[in-house]
Each structure stands twice: as C-alpha cells, then as structure tokens.
Image (cartoon, rainbow, N blue to C red; front, side):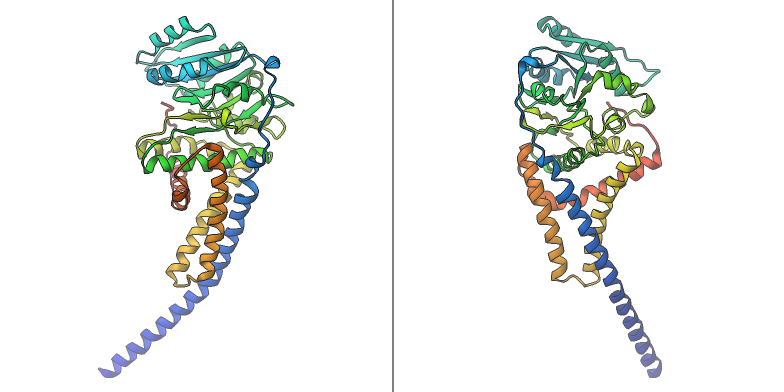
Length: 395
C-alpha cells in the first residue's frame, strides 16, 4: 500500500511539473499577443482617433451669402418632444430656412400641435403619413417623404427628441457646405443625467463619435448619426435615396453615408454651436435594443469599413483577454502593469480632450470599466443580430 501511495505521489508530481511547463510555454505567446494588441490599440487611439481634434473647425460665416435650406424631422408619437424642441429650431438665427416635420402615423395629439405651429411660424410645414396596420414601414419612408417635400437643396436632419445647443446650429452647419462638400457629419450627444446607465451611454456615444469623425477626416467616412447630419437633396436624388438598402428598416443615416460618402465630398463639424443633444434611454434594455438596431446595419458596410472597425474591437478584446490570462497563469508582473498603464493613459488623455470638446462631465473615472464592457456588448449584439437576421422597428 505504501508503495502505491509513493507511486501516486510521484505520478502527481510529474503531472504538476508538466502543467507548470505548459503554463510557462503559454506565457510567451500570450505576452507577444498582448504587446501586438497594444501596438494596434495605440495606433487607433493616438493616430486615428485624434484626427477630429486636429481638424480646424472654427469658421467665419458670411450670413449674407448663405444658401436657403430645409430642416427635416421625422416624428412618431413625439408630441411632448416637439412641443419643447421645435421652437429651438424654428427660432434659429439664419436668414432663409424652412422646417418640415413628417408626422409618421402618430396616435397622440401631434397633429393638432403641428397645426398650431403651422399657424404661428411662416417657415414651418408638416406632412402626415397615415398609420397602416397592414403595412409597416421604417423611418426611411418618412425621411424620403420629407426630403422630397423640401424646397431647398441643403437638407439638415435631426430627430424629434433632439435640440440644438445653440441658436446658431443651422448657421454653423450650413457654413460647411463649401469647396465641393455636400455631406456634413455633426455630433449628436445625449443629455447628462444621474445614474450608471447615463454614464455608460455618454461613454459609448463619445467613443463612437471619436471614431467616425476621425476616420472621416482621414478620408474614410463610414457613418453619421441621424440626430445631426446634413447633405444636399441632389446627392440624395442622385443616389436614388435609400433604394439600395430599402429592405433594411434601419440604416437611414449610417448606410446612406457608407454608400455615398467620399474623401472629397464629406466634411465634419464639432464646434459647440453645431452640436445637438437628445434624451437618453432610461432603461438598460431600451439602450441595448437601440444599440442592436444600430449595430445590425454594420454587416451591410463596405468591406474596408468592416475590417477597420473589427480590427479595433478585436484588438481591444484580445488586449484585455491577454491581461486576464496572464493574471490567471500567475505571470502578472510589473511589465504587464506597465503595458496596461501605457494604453490607459493614452486612452484617458484622448478621451479627456474629446470630453472637453463635447462638454461631457464625470465619466472619465468610469472609462476603464466601460472600455472593457462596450466591446463585449458589441460582440454579443452583433452575434445575435447575425443569428436572428431580423429588422428592428425605429419606433
């Protein structure tokens, strides 16, 4: 019996030594992968995501030489938001503009409210799409109706729950239509409120804006946000509107931009006076559904854009995964901490500059946590959207 015990003990020692050796063998490739992902991340953080900050956005606008334009808003059961936000748009400091609201099958009292605005503002008009239970349509139909009704070539789009941060919002965006630019990407943020979810939404909005605005400056525009985007009606007509992706209920903003934008025809604007704010989602489930609606259009992007976005997300996931694995393998040394801090400091520095530009507050301290969570959410939502292959209603 003693012999058996000694034999088993010797066998277990050998097994333990083999495991230790295998762990040691894993440490080196994981460390190499960690350093590689760090370099990729630093490239995105320091060389790509900073480009929007380097863009000279201040401009002198001659108000006497401005073009007339149209602001289009699609609204579905947005009575309260329209009541609050429409005056902020109708009273913009701009010499010649109209505001058109497309009342898309609303069942609240939006129709009466819009009729009152029509009586009080000469530059306001609206049209109604009747609700049809047998035929569901997305926001693209409402937008198409509004754009076709517009009497001017320059079109500015925003949402009913959005409001401009300045009475010079229209003026600033209109000033970007020069030097053959006919597609302008703006920044649309969310109101700052209390709570963890709001901070998560603020961070997610920030990181998305950093990326799409900076890539546009680099000559790789791939998306915009319907809360604050402008283009010429002639560009819309030339592209046959949303015809190529009409079967996708979402994507009226990013898929259109992905299709028509070029280095030559696209510009960005991030001045304070050009920004809009929206009401953020109030529950985690609502926010996830909103993100899934947006991410579900990513599979229709150009291959180039899908690669650029995938490399950033995957390298970030790999970076954190390698750190966790090295910690589990008990190979978590000072050089690993140093690598983590290099990325963290770079990330926080760039985000702080954007937060100042977008007037965000009290989310920097949460950035390290959110930075790990967002890629996981994105991967999960992308995976589920590919599996379900379903369209998601815009309202």
